[in-house]
Image 1: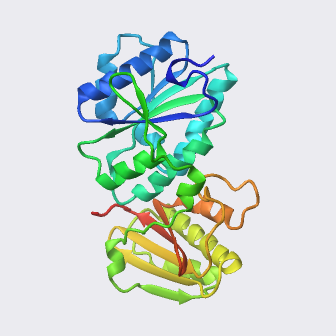
Image 2: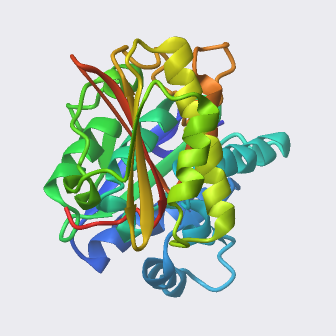
Image 3: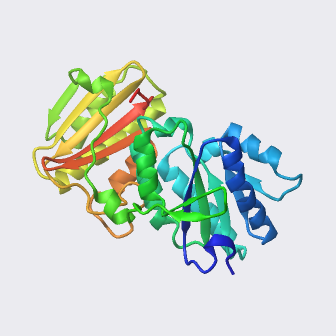
Length: 320
């Protein structure tokens, strides 16, 4: 039987914490964690170093709360989903009737790569809904950009408050609708320069060769191999499932390579494409799944002109 605010709820009970002080954060998190331990539920913290230590110090010795290495969990959205589903599955296999997790994304995720983490926050409402999970995602309202907070409200059904209440956000949007929306792609500064490579309707082999030829040692060579595979898959998808012309552009910077592939088609029909494995044979699903696991950032954009995917290898962060 589930306990606390999620009692009687079936599936995933997803909340945000929008805190403005350490005291605010602890006032929400400590009762949540201690209540889980008291109920005999698996109770987990996925915070980064500072907040993990803040909570650890505030808990009684031997509290029974599990602390995850937050930085490792949130390397990429696909790896986070895969890791958490594996963890949740293990708890359920051991008989858990409810699992409590409080976590936070690393600060870097709230900048130029926020778009795929916003997709993550939306998609997990579906991806975790087959588990009896109650989770809280913490955001520091003092430092989190307004555009990120707007997405947080739309991807979390509720906000947990220090007085113990759980308030609907009122603007929560179901993931299938949220993920299908058109939204602008933040331009990488390197895209303000002329591309080093520009190809029209390239064969996958031609696209692979172009990526290898443009490599200047900006990042480890195994990351180059990942980018080559990702570009090949994305180009193949565009040629097979998109509408011509298919255009590939590549920019090279001292710390990264950026590749865009666009066509005149509408893009994948599956709103979860890339974040979850395509188990239904969806067109292009495997290529997007591979690219989301291999690249340091993947951005998707659709508008009336067609669909664009941008792949980044190396450092994906830039000022926004």
